Image 1 (cartoon, rainbow, N blue to C red):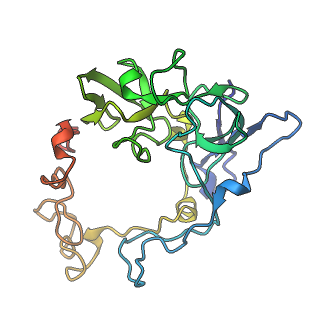
Image 2 (image 1 turned 180 degrees about the horizontal axis):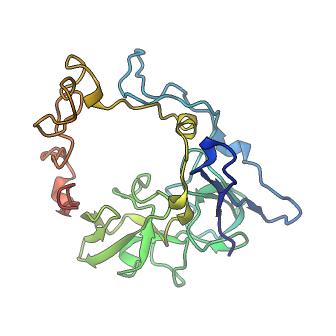
Image 3 (image 1 turned 135 degrees about the vertical axis):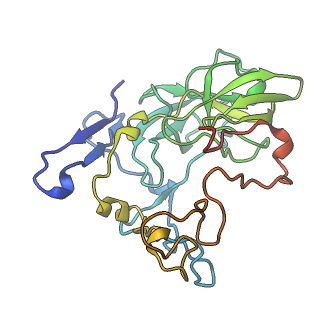
Length: 291
């Protein structure tokens, strides 16, 4: 299977000195086409007011809509075409995520986007199962956790049965089932957290593709600006009225690093102890100090 390519160019300018760019591989069933176009029936317009609430007040600093227009691709995270075989007819780039997506044509004529698993290419088949699988599970197949063997990589995991999958969807990530009991499966996530999830929840076999994206280097601040990330000012460079770490001479402050509101930022646990999902966590992910 052909892989995406991380390219480096001749540094003719200072902004290109450390730049490496990601050359997304776009494939289509029709070999005569050099690239693929998005399916317009599966795209939507998205809001451009990132970091601002419905009252126009900024709630997230250093975030804005970005300088590049983009359309949202509707991804089928639930994989509800049960028992219907589908064929991957194109591999496409999604500007809203770092993973590649695949356009799947099912036998009933429906077309849907899914996250493209690693080592999965065009013209290959996938299928989703509601109950016990009739055949052995392959990469890209979706099934309930009770039927997935222990120890194999999985992604696109549901937290509640029938809900949209909300875990392990980033490029190159995967989780592993450690053990099962009568009702729950203990899954180790990429963050090293171990969590109990009902066996009736579904997951997809394999690892999310586009692993090479981790090797990309933006190289200059302008490329971050394109993505909607504004310049960030250090708190120690501000005045005391603007930040708890501001003011003074030099960089020594004699206190634990905090954010603008005074919350500890390194090693401090911020999860609510009374959160509804806390009883399902077997072991927490390591803190910054433990890492």
